[in-house]
Length: 125
Image: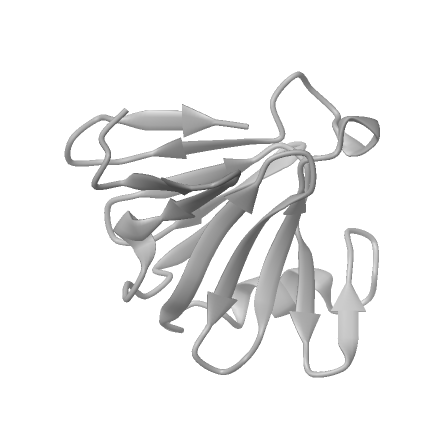
């Protein structure tokens, strides 16, 4: 794993490669989503919750897909994973994605997979 992409600080893993990047696309693939950041991609097998202002939208909620796609073009100001809790991506407008890493919320063995499109480095949770 490339240490410039994933930095460890205690149990928290910082996804430094997407900090300062804009989200460029959201791809819906059958039962998971891909979050694209002009190179790096996060496959979320446990679907993210979208936090916008005082609202939390989850899969199945009216406006959920729109809320995911509305972040396209937004800049990432923080991205980190707290193993056993959640992977969080915070955007410059104050909204965020939260991908649960708790075992009881997983649909597959992995909740999320990070792929760096340039270096081909990866990480999973």
